[in-house]
Length: 257
Image (cartoon, rainbow, N blue to C red; front, side, top):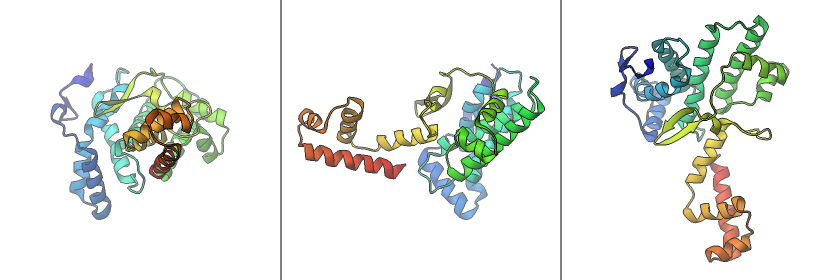
């Protein structure tokens, strides 16, 4: 596949640097505080592998990979410019939908499948609203929020967005960071889920920061459905201690979110 070329847009992809999360945050702080061009350039260079991983789902449609890569970099730059350091969200978590949105807009504008002008116009408005709301709230908006933003019916917004979207496999990888692969399936909630996939990933990160005993208590309580008394008997502490640890863990998760 063309994606496997060693050189894309004049860049040797085999030699791309990958930044650690703490290095990304340091450079983001430097860029936001001083406007340093060097910090911004380092952020762009250090996240080009992220762009490459996102464009994989858009290849195989006859599009030039160099063009897709350059469009993806535009999305990366927008993410750098608009990232809010006060939000406890990983940069890659915020960056992926920004890159994907830029690629979808490009493919929509050059789509060979005929879609009515009215649907294309509404889809364009919806995508703009989605980007504005993502920047404002640091998380991907729901369809209801997008519909309200552009004063349209939810069903019309869904139809418009579907008209410019191509079907993908639920098990198609979106991004892999340190061996933890993110699939399309991970971004989908059930009909009662009003939070975005970014919230879900933030929740996972918050739980990872808990101690082993706290994780075990939450697992037994909320995944195994055990009472605090049953948990206390199983792990050998008092019910009062279970209650205190459970409450503390939940408060820490809420604080992280």
